[in-house]
Length: 118
Length: 108
Image 1 (cartoon, each protein chain N blue to C red):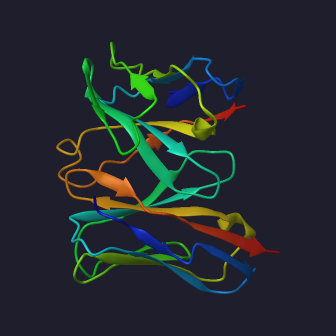
Image 2: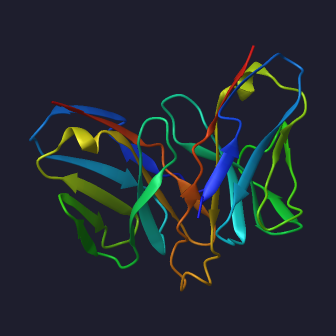
């Protein structure tokens, strides 16, 4: 199993450009998440999905869009890049809480995408 | 929105010393997790605690869930350079959120 993979690893964008961050998992997890991590800070949830065709906003969704057409893939789209979106983006996946026996789900993270907007 | 405050925000100590970091909230949680994130990588789960007062040990790491299930501590004995990283707590009930993190540096 490759786990959670993300591409690209690094990207530099100009203000106003758009791009898609790719995320794929091969663990057959229902839940997938996108987080951003600003320098020296914790993780903030952007969007999440509980299954194919279902997405929901997290804490900081503005400026981003997601889709979930398959169980494996959960791409994150930036339409009009802004300097405030400079960050490291992490994708994660997990089994739902009910499958975890009511305990907190274990999140498996990808290696991250470092994005700079100039 | 439940807020998870972690302290200290930064900690730098010599190899061999002991340390404790904290995760606090005003909310009661059904479970709490600790993750460690090494530079350039995503976080990795260390432990999940679910019972008030619960203590779990992972080699030199000891995790405790507060009796009231509002806080947790992580104690490291005889810290080693390999313990360097960002320690994140994660807690909640239906929706779980990450804390602000403690960045730990162990100096050889």
